[in-house]
Structures are given as C-alpha cells and as structure tokens.
Image (cartoon, rainbow, N blue to C red):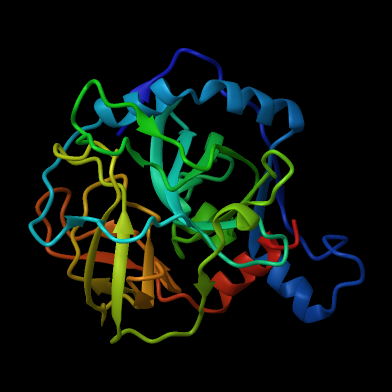
Length: 307
C-alpha cells in the first residue's frame, strides 16, 4: 500500500508525556499514567501543508499502487447504512512513502478523537519514527453506482478531510512494539467538530475475548484497492500471547479498523472493543488479531480527548 513520494516530510514535534508538568497538578496515579504515553503534535503550518498534500487523486493512487492480495470469501462489501464513523487514515510513513490504514471516530469530550492501530501512526520499536502528513477521511467510499475498480470512478469524500493535529500512543509501542493501539485528534472542519459531523462509536476497555464482533476495514485487495468499506463478523478468541483473534482475514489497509461489539446493522452503531492489528499470514490467512483493550488503551483515549 506504499508509494514513494519525492517531497520532504513535514517535521512534527514529538513530546514523550512525562509526569512533571504534563497536566496541572497531576496526582501520582495520573503522573504514572502519563509517563506511559507518547504524544506527537503537528504545527498549524504543517497541517495546512498536509491538507494541500492529500488531494483526491493522491488518495486514490495509494490503493492503486498497493501490493495487492485477494479478499477472503468471508469478507464482504458493507451494504448497510453509511458507516460515517469509519474512514481511511492517510499518512506518509517513516520511509517517505504514502500509505493508509482504517480508523474510527469515537466518543470523547473534545468530540475530535479517532482510534486506530499503533503501527498506523508509528514504526514499532523505533522512537521518533512517527508518521506525518496525516488526515482522516470518514465515510470514505467509491462513488455511488460504480465499482471501486473502475478507472472512471471518482472517490467520494462525503464528510470532507480532517487533518490530524495530535497523536497519542503507548510508549511501549514506540519503544518495544507492544500494545498496538493509538488515538489521533483531528482539527475542526468548517467550524464543526468531527463528532458533530459523523458522531462517534462507544469505546470499552476490559472486555474479555469470547464475544461476537463485526470487523470493518478498507483492505488493499485486488478487488477493492482500498476504495470500498468491507466487513466480516465472528466470535473472538484469546491468543497465547494475550491478544485476541477473529476469523475475519482482511488484507493490508484494514489495519486499525474497528471491532464493534453489540453492532446494530440498522444504525451502524456498536462498541469498539479492539482494532485490526496483524493477520496470521501475509496473504491468505484465516484470522486477524487485535489487542485486548486494557487500562493502557483507556489512558491513550483519555489523554487524546484532553487535546
């Protein structure tokens, strides 16, 4: 899903959140929590450049130039009500290549918080190698009446492009490649917050594996090329390494997509209990894995909604 770009990367400011002065008068518990997180922020000038960078054509090219796999038979196009909260997260990675993931708008006090996977914002176990040129496009999809593979079809941006102003991730992801989850915070668009435009899914931490979930993502498969939202449903199972898996093998690009428990197909609402992390095979796998969201994931969300 990568494409080499000649332009220089934007320079973001990185702040590892530490106890001293991160928030006014934090308690010892708050200080310990904040010390476990890393933040990345982008300046106003960087964000303006990012919005100019991501044209509809450039977004389409990311999928068109992807290393393509093939969709599993259990992964199908979503045909229910528009999933406004789910969209594509575009970025330039640490190699200077354009890429994308899937992400989800969630409820938060700032009405601007989006959840995704840690590897969608940062190269694991590589401090400082965070992604840049980051935007979230909720409800992204192929133009109505056309298949995603048609060259004549123009991609649809029904709610516009929201530029990302901050990223929060577990420091363990940045340093040790553990806890593959992250939150991004977006700017308002045309004076409106993200949640005022598309709403937000509920977020739950501490849910044990074993329940049914509906998984969404924008896979970079030969059939879809990231242009259409796909889904699959299944029951989660615990993995030996403390994560969870579900028999919904999606291709790359679906990373960061939501696992929604209690999903109501009529309203498009549920509760986010994990996000797509990695499959069991590079291509043709049988499951996809995700983190069991625990207190650290809750801290990531709590910090993001303060920004």
